[in-house]
Length: 350
Image (cartoon, rainbow, N blue to C red; front, side):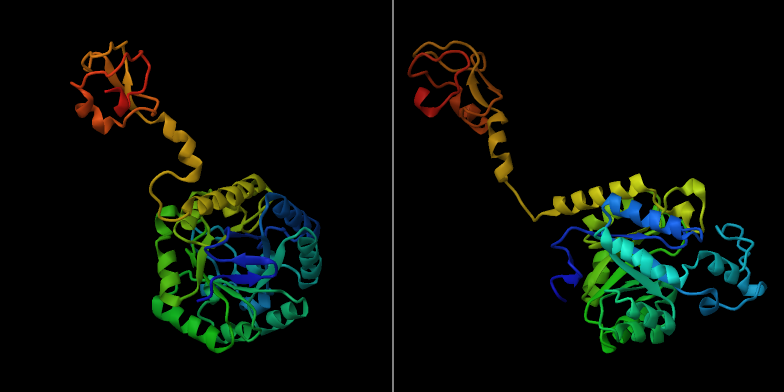
């Protein structure tokens, strides 16, 4: 496993601040103007990358509204429609890709996409994307995995629903087909996902088991789960992003709004900064605080030759006197000279 993965000018790994991806998905509501506004809003939040999806309804499923092609789960965000209609509403027109990517790059973000078939990969190659994402529902599509891996570009794969055996097949297929830089994202494929169903302790296990970078594709609300994931070693965090949940959109209900994404960028970096290393004792920054420790002081004026006792010496702040551990040894000693109240006790005074 390499120390870090480089995508364009961004290094990804535990030695670098988390790589935060804003996922537009279908939140553009079939408006290119809105899509570009989402790009601009994502850039203002400080997100490092903007991701879209590349497919058509026909490349995803069949034009049927019956049986398993109809979304009948009453708890689904998309209940009552067909898979075909849903993907037709959510897809990003291919002619929009270049203006979306161009705007993101102009604003300093890395722009890439999730392809769902060979034609999408060929199209994205023509746009010179620098990396690829594989969605959870496609992580067992080994022909697609091999096609993307053959580009030789970094791959980010969501692991939603996949067993260890399935992930082993996926990782082997990717590496054998030419992928050298691989990032696996722990993902829970429910929308939204609940924190208790997210199991982010899997993240360090993914890294160790497959010898690759690991992160989180987060469908929970808020920033808490993502921050905790970074504390566990996640080097990538992906979140769906929208201008406003109230304005609707196929994924808006579990997408972050701009102020939330900005908070995510800040708080995940703070979490990463806080990790540091195993450390005891005062840090360089703490040295000046040593003075505020407790130590032994004269609490009353003490005459030369007088015995020190709990009546005239105390353990108090600041910390310029003898450490508290010597208090019992100090008690009963005679002052070698007059000691004024407020004087730190030192060995030469007794």
